[in-house]
Image (cartoon, rainbow, N blue to C red; front, top):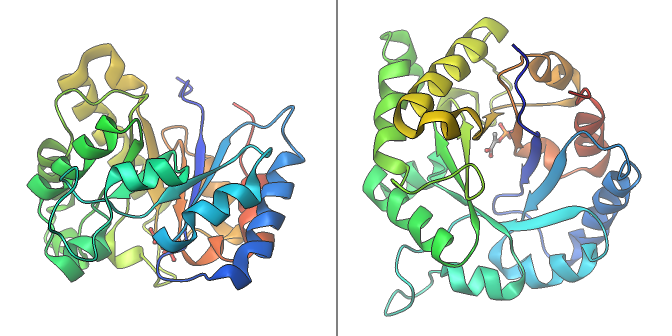
Length: 255
Ligand code: PEP
């Protein structure tokens, strides 16, 4: 059965981007605007925190949303260098990525931390994009689904809804490597996650957006978007260039 969920195509600029890249963001905004009337997807770019405010002003009037890449789990306080969900919302962000594998690896973030961040995002009206995904070793050991189950169970707040929460399946070994799972493996994981979400959230579980992330490029976006249980993508490297990001957007079929 066709998946009824409206797709989201989200970019993650990671630690890339200064004011010099705002014209590139504008080109993305103009490109997605070109398909506004019949666009089969929503579009988002998650920029570095320093750029959120200027990015929002750069894309104003276009359908492109702007998000952050992380937030602290606390509302405010003595956390030097951290960014709160309220700060992102105040700057105009509508979404925030939480639990990206680079945060889990570089900063030791646990599922409990990620859930706290998602809760903080929700409290500020931000949509949390919760990332999960196995390492190469975990896949080779046949544990990919168990790992993702544990991350989903531990990272998703009990009150998460399809309106407040997006889930991105990002195999760690596919991020920034040019490697991707087979289409069969992506479909199997997305179907599996959908089953887990239905078990936990009932009928609402069918409506969460399930993004795939990991080396999505113009050359492979069409076949990945052809999987009915893939509701869009989280894109790192290829979101930095407007031509690439817009080519990926163009590969999204009408549903
Ligand atoms: C990411 O940063 O979430 C990501 C998927 O990166 P890339 O597309 O470069 O693999």
